[in-house]
Image (cartoon, rainbow, N blue to C red; front, side):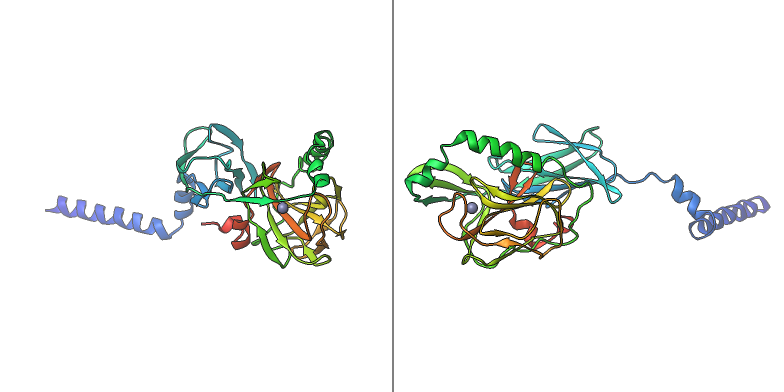
Length: 290
Ligand SMILES: [Zn+2]
């Protein structure tokens, strides 16, 4: 009897000690020895060919997807990376893995079809596309402008439409120029009259502001994490390379310079030199993508 009472008393003491531990002085020590949970997330969970994924982790410094390895960037206390989804990717479920194979995340790429868009241009304009030497030389300069990007994002919110107007060509359309299949239209065209103000779609640093052969008067902005926006065919430029811009700041005016059939803004978004669908950026910041 005495013995069992002593055991009961001892048990009570232990229980008390555990109970106290959760709220008392010992709690911080218990938290310190707990293993930090590893996270690997991909946003949004469902996406489409030609779009972009935003990968986030508290541990993974590199991830693998589509048979490629992507180094993550340390920023704001986590590792992040934009991964473009090639436009020809087959619909289905894919597994993203940390390079050390310790973490996994599933993503769904849903099917999407892209319409064709026929345009007719003058012989003189059509011949512009034949000048591959000039186009290639300029591409080197363009790629160089997008080779460096801030490690910390300039953006803290959703992107805004850079101009008011009518959407004339959506993203991803297959272009037919004078009856011949041309390149895919990896941008959105917004038509409005010449001189309509064009605004920076988000905060960033201007990395290029000059007249280019195909896209005419062009501005390119680095938003950080290798995310860039590009504004083409403008009649006038209101910023210079190297300048920091705020979201909604005037950067130029609608025009029809370069390979263009009428006044409109050719607005593109890229990860490095890969074009991506701009539309998800207008709904929410990538950090908020579900
Ligand atoms: Zn365009």
